[in-house]
Amino acid sequence: MKLNGKQIPIVYSLFLWAAIWELVGRYGGLAILPPLSAVFEAGVEMVPTDKFKSAMVVTLDAYFRGLAMAVAIGIPMGFLMGVSKTIDRLIGTWVNIFVSAPLTAVVPIFMVILGIGQATVIASVFLFAIWAIVLDTRAGVKHVNPSLPEMAHSFGASRWLIFYRIYLLAALPEVLAGIRLGLIRAVKGVVIGQLLVAITGIGELFELYSRNFLFDEFWALLLMVFAFAFATAEAVGLVEKRIEYYARTR
Amino acid sequence: MNQVAKNMTETKQDTIVEVDGIAMRYEGGVQALKGVDLKIPSGELTSFLGPSGCGKTTLLKIIAGLLTPTEGEVRIRGKKVTGPGPDRAFVFQDFALMPWATVQRNVEFGLELRGMPKDQRGEKAVKYIAEVGLAGFEKSYPHELSGGMRQRVGLARALAVDADILMMDEPFASVDEQTRRKFQEDMLDLLSKEKKTVIFVTHSIEEAVYVSDQVVLLSPRPGQVQRIIRTEIDRSKSPDEIRRDKNYLDYVDDIWAVLRTYL
Image 1 (cartoon, rainbow over the protein chains, first blue to last red):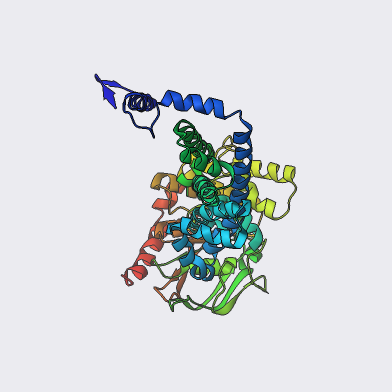
Image 2: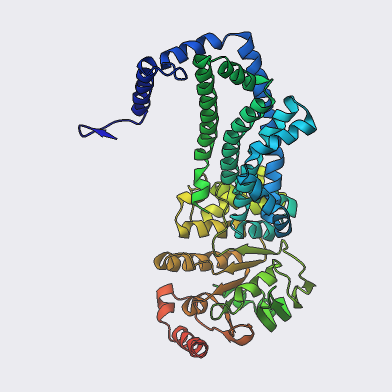
């Protein structure tokens, strides 16, 4: 973006949109869109409350548990799909269906099986996060230069050693990219899970605020969730950048 | 290069690798090799030369134990090959360096797999990195090196494990011409010190004649041994003299005469 021939940093566009929001909120007369300053105020008031804190604890607990499960199961699954054609054919179609399916529709099934509670939310996080991790890990393993495992074999490496010393490290850039996507999708998973269950965590808060027309609080919470998703993804992005040279030299 | 070996006639006649009736058919029906018999003398440099797709790399990988032949067997000092072993080290066409590891770690890799303690293998790696002319690059990563330098790392890694047989699969194919010549000369120098049996795959006639004591000519697919040419070239001469040597040029012409019939 340029103004009077000068390059303007991209962050300034954020300020511009913030200003527009403030003005529309103040003078637009829309009940659902309060001015940004009011949203910030509501946020500052909201954070120290016990209700918010306990909602955060419940939410982060579900988020990280679901995510940990998705990583712990997703990476080996993608790995097996990458090295074995049989396994790839066996579950590849399902993974591809799930990665593009409207998973929100599946969450109610969890409610039936797991009950209306934390377990359902964790399952929802898991379900949203895992597929990107599986597919990216699979792609990473598939892209490993075949000379590398052959080289390790020629120096007498066992199969197992080739797996973790060559495949896992060589696929690391893609695995991290998968985890980054998984983190973002897991935020979706936790919010949708809690909204559908509707009695826990920030899902409960969202319900509470929107039902009672507390839009200052509603937007404040929404912005926090957005910021969280963005920040965690960026954090993984930083790690990815550090090992970027892998990908360039394969 | 193998002046030493040549002077010791008894070494020269020892066969270290015996290829016996090797046939290779890939899944999907491609017959890469058929009825290959071959004896590779100890302490010499033997190269496999042939048109693209004649199975020379396949043959090399079978000897290395990386591929299992459909028929026949390979024996090393009379013992049947069933897989890779510490008597052989492989240099890959695309270098096969681990991009996440430094030059030092890459060169140590073979030693590490053989269970050598850390300080010992570190020392050995440093020595071979210097021998291939990369002293000072121990902490560099492969992506910071040129193609020629990367292959020197591959060579150092193979030399470090101190195998009797060094197997090289078109090691200079991904290296530019000037670098290749220098590299060939350095390699011959180094090998004359190391006294190894070398099996070398190439599609360059000049390269084969220049570096080898014995050139094995393979026919197009399915690859068979067409001819074995022993190159009697006075290798005490300088590299440039060798490249102008009458014998050298005659061998190149002879081989070309055979290879052109495949076109």
